[in-house]
Amino acid sequence: MSFDENEPQSVREQRFAAQRANRRTARKAASLDLRGAHVGAVIVTVALGLLGWYGKLVALGIVSGVFLLWFAGALAWAHADGDHRRHALHRAYNVTFGWGDGF
Image (tube, rainbow, N blue to C red):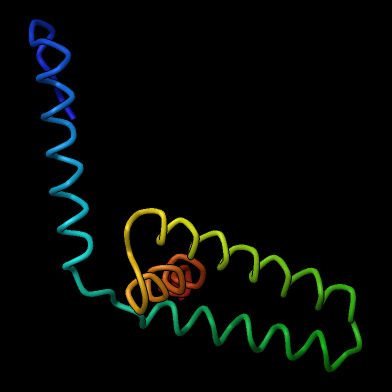
């Protein structure tokens, strides 16, 4: 977001609002690639399964709680951003497990 020093504040705010609306519309229209998120979810599931298998219940609770809170926060953020229903779930899932794209 660039701005001219001499432009009035009201004009600048209107332009910024229009830019934010355009980005939000483009973000909502874009399809989400969930392959990396699926990989991340599988990695977390395997890790949680191994923690449960070896009886590390405290670690299992902590790790699963962290991912649950992470997903809940991402879902609240997506909902506050104006997404609803399936698209909000996809965005939260992608934010939570999308790091699996690096594997």
